[in-house]
Image 1 (tube, each protein chain N blue to C red):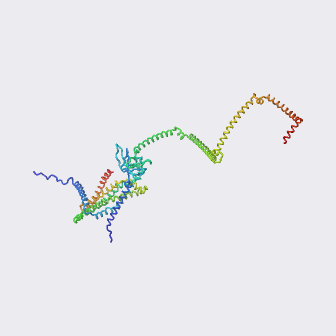
Image 2 (image 1 turned 60 degrees about the horizontal axis):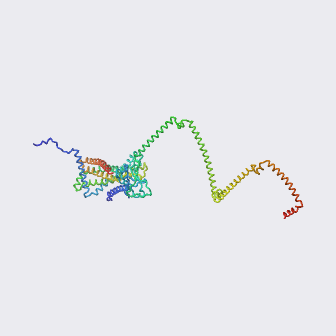
Image 3 (image 1 turned 180 degrees about the horizontal axis):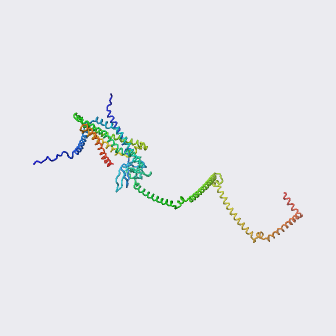
Length: 330
Length: 266
């Protein structure tokens, strides 16, 4: 029969080794979480009240755990100097003007230090730098706010209670609306009318929309080159010509105005009987005389015409008229 | 004239019979511990017997300790859940369990199991050797029975109990994880991250210190009761019984003292 030598020591050795392995893994896991084996640097923050912060408490930056509280010492009269051990790898992210405050990792969780803010234009924080601090809201402050809020809530509910009492007792418009059916009907009618008005507005708005669309089309066409109005707007030469034409038209209008004025003056004079034309136009006696004169002139011209014909046949002037005819023919 | 001494009662005890026996017992334990340290650091060292005892104390106890640790983790998680659920804080279960198991339960449960199993075993084994005069025979044969029987056993249990505590802690946490995963669907990484986030090196150190103290106590109590057993087979039973009772009592006393000291350091 073969017996295994040293069986028991080997088993005990394995047992001890496994046990120690559990311890080592635990230590390294814990060390990893507590950042024990990570290169770090220290910075300080001086608080008036650390609200129960403990050594070993976590330090958060932008919600990430970046270190632990290394030491807590009194500073000056009653202030507290908190030394923070921060991972070296995040040093470049924390700026010199970053701020620190005391917070907690839950509603009733452990106290922690929260680093926040920091302008990216500032230099990164250095070893043993002092961070600015801000007083954070403690549980007492929150309770005080809660107390104030509950007082306000009580007043509001009291007011509501009073309002509901009035409504129930039939006071006010709201009560009438709830209790009086005629009021409700009126309101219903008003709402119907309002609905109709809204419907009209809707139609108007559709029409307006169409008008705007047309205007848009028109303006689009106006913007197209080659269009006469577009040329008018955009062609500078044409603009000058139109301007010149308008100036000339203006001058012509002035001239027409002057002419009209003159005509007015002339017509005024014609209407008066203190001048020859006026007498002719306005005096009936003179007109009758002129009529007679014209009649006489007509008779005279007829007689003169006859005389002249007789003169053409006269031997004294016959040669002259023959010469005239010859000259016309040539 | 000669004094008349016949009527004066003879003083046989310092305080009373029981009180004298009690204080004598304490003195004897003190002497026993001193002798242990004297023999422990003097050669020759009984390495083979120490390894044998480590095997019995450590390896042979592992299954019982593992099962107990697992049940402890599961039961403690189940018991804690309703209280935390009232506040909607079941996500804190891993933290609570890790603090409870690493700081207190793992060392305490392991030590109590060791006291029941190993302490009684030592008391009965050494007691039976004493009443059957095997120890006297060893002395006659030139073997140092104290070194061979007591020192090896006490060293073995003092060394093995911290190792058993690591196993109990790990298995207890695994039991808690299984229960939490089943109910809260917490992932393995999230569970252990949350668990380790709540404990510190001081907790682990205090657990190791506790385990060493408890191991030494169980070993000394078991060996002392067995080594000084008398009155035949009845004395063997009494030795085993006393070893368990005294070990457990001393474990709780030490627990209280160590917690006070650790809290003062914390």
